[in-house]
Structures are given as structure tokens and as C-alpha cells.
Image (tube, rainbow, N blue to C red; front, top):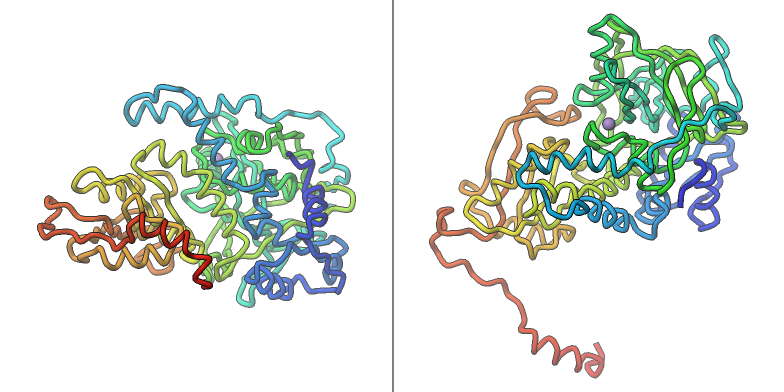
Length: 485
Ligand SMILES: [Mn+2]
């Protein structure tokens, strides 16, 4: 099912006992973080703070923070159902084109298959424009924006869907880049160098032009997820969202910039990011569990704010994992497994544990067929989109359950001769990594924990794994109830 907006999702959560209303006045500065942190770590409900101190707009948080709720957001019983649909889509062409280029050629095909889920343009009467504030009337102070952590540089918008267009083609991109509020009409735009928003800005800047930007808050929660998904540039986030929700996304033109935004959003912030202007941004308590230190980033100048009547402000907090974003990441892990397997077919499964902030550790199981196969897979993953940021990759054999960290530790420590089985490479590193020698550049480690072959320098016999014989297991199964255990 598709939600006709964020509040419809909140209603469904509430009916399912997944949302708690808080009427006690609570401060958006730090207090909401402390409450939400305790609730998310306990696997608790979504929270609707109806009386944030100093504001009339309620704050919704923690709405996607369990497997059940992210699945509800996608309108399915479990996110694996969407992964299955994507797997079918990937296999749709029947005969797989040979070679990497043939496979790459499938990607625009995927975008075409999504054409029936392409967004629809509506001309007027959009809920997100029920109230329009232009020019000096538009104020970020009207939004109950959180200051999340004590050392944060200020208040940050944490769930913004940032819409930009490529200068030459007008092709849309939607990304999620946090926004620090400087004053009622100025905010930081934290698009990092590897992100599409940053590329669009650079293209405009090279021509000396300010880039128009629109920021949506709320709407069907699938849109919020889509803005975080590591999609190839060819795939429009709004088409991807339409595919997941099985219904096109309605878009409406902004009031002051030439950008289309989700008609069902709670808030739209319109404006421009000027060329050749930077401002100190941060610090910000980030999803690594550490503060990201101050740095210079572009700035958004607000030209309009539109919103629904009686809007709700959707937000999240990041910090020491696991937090709500663990479930956005897990959704990506599941939904993108078929696409990883399209390029690296020997992959059986992978696990990006939230505790390792997704990019610090990738545990991958493979069907090993030849010497060096584990190393081949490491390099393939380091060359595959945002998987390039995987700081540590552990490769295990196909029978290992990568979701079972106990099993992974048992094998990844037993099966290695470290000097022989560890591979170091240098390359791009997540810009949030505070330990690398430079921002965005450093080393990565691959651990080959597969069973070794003679050609890999292992000539002793490899011992069998201890397992009970199936007949005995069956005999004990039939005896079990008599044992009284
Ligand atoms: Mn994109």
C-alpha cells in the first residue's frame, strides 16, 4: 500500500500500537534526543511529541526504527518482500547480457521498467502548499528543529529530502544532507564530495550560477528512504519510490524555484545555494557515534516555506549505534543484495552490521570456486558504488550465516593465517572516518576467512567442521519429548 502522506503513516502506526503520543512539554534542545535515544535502544515505539517547548508544531521521531516499522513504511509484511521483487526485476531480461558492460546496460532498463511508476505532475491544490510563506515571511524558526547533542554547532534538520537538478540535462536528484540552521533564512547544506547534490552544485558553480534547491520534509516514508538509498545516478529516487509503493509519486512545482516536490509533504523549504559561498558547519554528533568536526560547506538561502495546515515535523537523531538509521541501512542492505549479485554473482549474502556503521564492516559469503576468489570479491565490492567505503571486508564460505555474528567470529578467527589472508588496499574512505590519514582517503582491509586451497599456500589437510550425522539428529529429534529437557 502507498501512504497518502506522513500523517497517514502515523495513523497506521498508532492503530498498530507502534506510536506513542507525548503530551508533556519537552525541549527540542537535547531533551528529545535523550528520550529518543533511550526508546530506540530499547526497541520502543515511534514518538509524537505534541508539545515541544516553544513551538506549536508537533515532532515525530523514531518512526522507522524497527524492522516491523520500516516494513510497514514500505507497505509490506517484511522488507525481504521488496528485495524479492527487485530480484525478479533484475532477472527480467531472461538471458543475462554477457560481461560487465552488458550488465551495466541493464541499469537504464531498470529505470525504464519503472516508467509506469514515474512521478505524476499535478498542477495545483497540493497539500504541501496549503500555507505559503514567501520572502521575509518564510522562517526556519517556525519549525521545531532539534539541537541533538551537547557539542553540536546548532540546530540541525536531520530528515531533509534535498531536490536538485543537473545543470545541463535538468535531471532530478534527491539526497539526504543534514542542514544546520544559522538563522531564520540561512542553513548549511552538508552535501559531501561524493554525493550527487555536491556534483550538481559544482556544475552550477563552474558557470558562476546559484543552484535552485527545494527541501521536502515528510510525505510517504518511502520517499524518505529513497533519498537515502545508494542508487546509481541513472535511477530517479522518485521513480524508485514509485516502484516500492506501487503508485506514482505526485509532484507539484515550487512557488519560487523551478523544482517539483512531493505534493503530500508536510513542509517544503525553497531557496538557492549560491556559488562561491562557504560557511563553517558543525560540529555534529554523527552516526559513527563521534562528533564530525567543523568544516566549510555551502549554504542555503531560503526564499519560501510552504506547508500543510497543522503540519507535523518529521525528524530523527543519529549517534552511537544502533539508532533509527540502522533500519534505513538494513533496508538498503536487503534491497540492494540482488543488485550486488547482479555484478558479483558468487555472492550468497552479506551483512553490514549497524554497530560498524555500515561502511566499517562488510561480512560476505561466497561460492568459492578458485584460488584467490575471496580477494576477487573484495576488489569487486571495493569497486561497486558506495561499497567502496567498506573499511573491512570479511569473506566467508557459502554455508556460513553472515547474519549470525557468533558464527562469523568463530570462522573469521579460526580460518585465518593473518599474514597470508589479510589484504590491504588504499582508496576512497567515508568522509566521516576520523581515523584515516586524510579526510576521504585511507586504507582498507580484506580478511579471507574461506577454506584455503593448496594454490593459496595451504598444503596441510583442512580439517572437517564438527557436525552430527543427520541420522543421529533425526533419532534424537524423535526421542526429544521423552527426555524431558
Ligand atoms: Mn541519485
